[in-house]
Length: 442
Ligand SMILES: [Mn+2]
Image 1 (cartoon, rainbow, N blue to C red):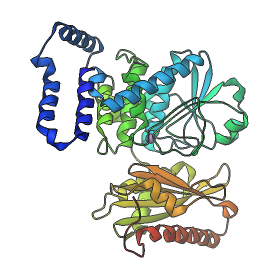
Image 2 (image 1 turned 90 degrees about the vertical axis):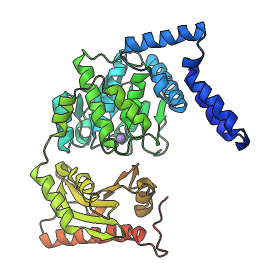
Image 3 (image 1 turned 180 degrees about the horizontal axis):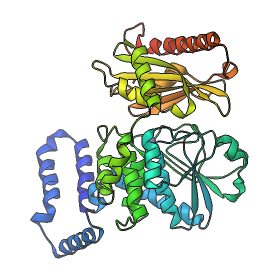
Image 4 (image 1 turned 180 degrees about the vertical axis):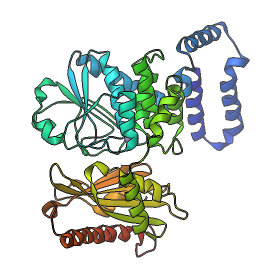
């Protein structure tokens, strides 16, 4: 607490007139050295309790690691969440992930489930699409992560009356096909916990949206750090969940390369519990041949302009959808390229539906993927954007509508691809090569 005050003083001081500079420096120096320079009996006892607590908890207390702002948000949100969970003691909740859940979503949902379990709340974690990234399949299998696939069709046969509420983690309902069903069943939204920019007006009893935070896993880890659930390194489920969180926050921060202080603090905390060997096995999962083929196609078809690389990869099976972001991850590593966009037409054989799916990856700090995608593709007739993003990454989905569905005629199929390919390129290149020569992003 002492540190927090002095930090606050520092920031207040920074706003005051520069003529006070030297005095203020002396003050803040004194503040930071207070513990060692002046030790009153009450300070000593305070310090001892902190040390004792650190020893008990096996590490540094979070109050000292968090910035005042993070500390305030983390404690306030954890408190609100605790109260929501208390009100729903004994309930069953449905935790909804995006259709193609990533490690951040999977690990965060699992953590929520473990937290809620303490309030006797039973959670079922569901997603409507598929686990298509080899690392996600490995994560679910190796860690025994309790997520179930409910296709939109299968979900219709489920009795949603078994649930008293639903929870959106790492999404806000816009990326799950299950949303209409949930709304139809009038299932109350108990919580939304996400780090994407606000996608509209999903009303929830508890909301924690932090667009400035790099990973939802960081948010959930903060709930653990402030005491919503005490991890125990002798509990194998806790160890696996901590490993999943580590994977989630690593993968949403480009292996910590884009991590901010709070992500490192979260990773530091998880490092006490996670299983490095298990994480290594998850990361070692190999790419399928079909994913390699899509990457190859993206390399062959790419067009580079103004440091953007754009590649259409044609038709893909639904299960290989995750090859698109993987190809974008790869293309953005080329010299003199800062942004990659890869897209293809994904064919869902179960529903005979087709949709253009695209991914954007950028290393350009001044390019906001969310704005870029919204500006490039605009909105559908209902006013919903075709996509959006977070820091350094974004995605889009454009339904083929009336043109959707497979056709026996190869020439027709080729023409259809060419039309979509040309249209998407046109929309992207409008932003890549604007007339005034300036890339219109942030
Ligand atoms: Mn995420």
